[in-house]
Length: 461
Image 1: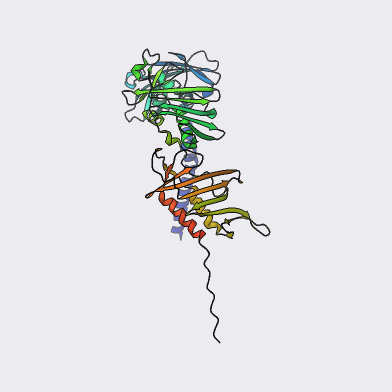
Image 2 (image 1 turned 90 degrees about the vertical axis):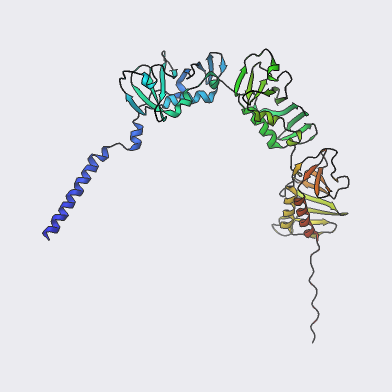
């Protein structure tokens, strides 16, 4: 019994000692988050208070930038509009820059760190500051994860994160505004493209885009808006010549393609020349003399055929907004209309109204409407292509949006291929024959007279 009591007292003493250690030692040790918070900041400055920057890139090129209001401008080596994103990357990182670890407080030789002649220098002045504060950046560490750095006013060498090299090592070209063509994206209301195959013109009417050249047809909203967005955000890849003396050298004396964007009363135009040696393409904003390059994919996009801008949906109506559907095929016409049901709280329903009036399965009919409204153009054949539309196999007239809008579509067949044409548009569209055939099978089931149950013969007595 005494031995058991001694063991208990021993364990209690051990637990008490452990508890004291945890309280007095471990509780005073900083947590990992606290340790991170205690990293020294390289500079005490707020990003939006920085008014002037000087950046020397590893290649030796120096750029001076100054802030005017909220906008940054390059002051030297030339007066240019600055790239706001690039400058913001520098100012925000200067304001949050931390010393990852101090390497040496008083180094005898800075050369071993690449700081005797720093590869990169970033200097800045904030509000009310007379002198620049400077960050000097040397070599990467052996692992490549960090960079040796120091402030210009002290000897101490410390480490900063290696990923910051791409932030601070910026040339004048990197820091300049590289927008290829400037226009008000929200006001864009026309696009004109002149290329080897002729002219393409697109015009926006309220929220809809239409082709006016080479044919007056509906345009695909997403395709047109995508092109405008691509042109609006495309950036220069390089500058070939600030003030060229001969545009022929770049294929810009007779451009391969010219695109013009109208935005209200203003207009911006871009000329596309030949390929550059690095696989890009020479281009020129016609309002400036400068020749620059862009990715070749943009030039390829501008060379699209006019048909690629056409809207691919055969029908405008959708099952939820259709009010009348008339179809003629095999010499017969059938009319279906959305009518008000009878009784209290009755909902609208679909009904066949010609050649005779009868109720139909609404869910099946809406399934048929869905298949028809989903018919899309696979391609747009040449004007002289055989389409069978001179003797159509079917014709459809629909009313939708409360009967305010109407559209007419004819369908033609040549062997196993199906074609469609809208009454308000020239030309024809090739469609998926199996999609059309399935829709017609669904309609045939709806048109079939309801099966009648034969009367039972009278029971024999």
